Image (tube, rainbow over all chains, first blue to last red; front, side, top):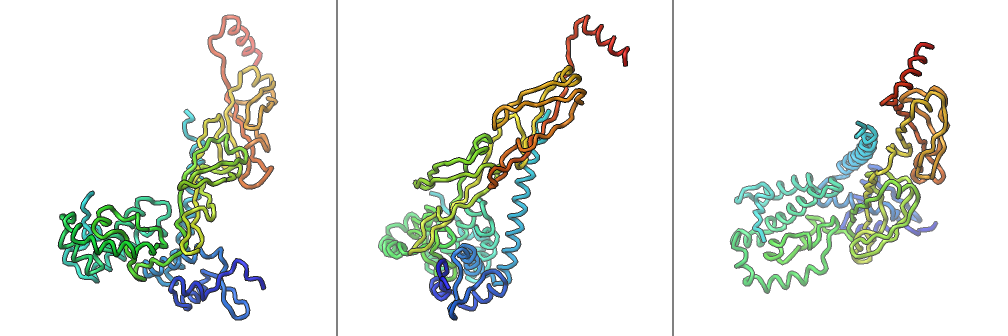
Length: 99
Length: 296
């Protein structure tokens, strides 16, 4: 199988100084997807941005995998609400300055 | 350069223990962390200041020096010069994953401690991906009616950008890899571009639908006729039905704004007729209206 765009988890562990078990926990929470090819574990490079955010939350704020799951869910909600707020603001302009 | 009371920043007493300082730092960091406060510049500023305070107060040596020189930090300059030079050489290899880099520290901090230090795993300066950048782009509504190419300069770098037609006011798009440069072969950060769309046209916009109010004279409203209106896509001829009522609406299908990222799909143009009753009637006109009134 093609490993193009996949990053070795082992490499990530040593780079970020993270235990392999942390990746397992994130996967259990459904926060990342680990691909196993010939018994070697990889993560897709598109997930790196989110993964780094999770590592920062873990390192800098001492948040565990469960907490990260909650934070990510809430951030998604915030994003959705912000989008909605923007749409409502734009809609409001329809009724402004009419008279 | 302003003296910064790091104890005040963390909200702790000057006699606070290392444990109390850590606790206060963690609490504030959780509140103002940039990952939890996207696009909030005030929070970002506070987070940097909190980090700076933690850099000083959580290291016994730094704290001692800060306590010793305090407001007279300038006198510490010569005394610590040699030490600082050593530190600066070390720092050239340090980088930060959450964007609080060396330059993010205050002048006060840098003059006293010589810039940001790597504060060990504890504060998590581990990343190699570049910093994400945020930028704003101000455009006019007519500019975003069609797909267009723009060349932006972000941090002295030119970025060629294709803006899809129909982008919304306040919409943010992510341009991968156009943020800060990655370190040690790491990926670049992303550029987040927020659009501010000014509308100087006669139309109001809601997503891909456009709304306009058109004045209609009494006679055309009663007898019907034709009107020509300007749209973003040229002139459009409108057939006015006889006996058109005030505030009635017509929908011109597909004459609205492009649907974002859906080529050749357009919203509708909704027109509201605003009936204009003639004023300053002549005696003859009044007479004819009276005759009309009698007929009703």
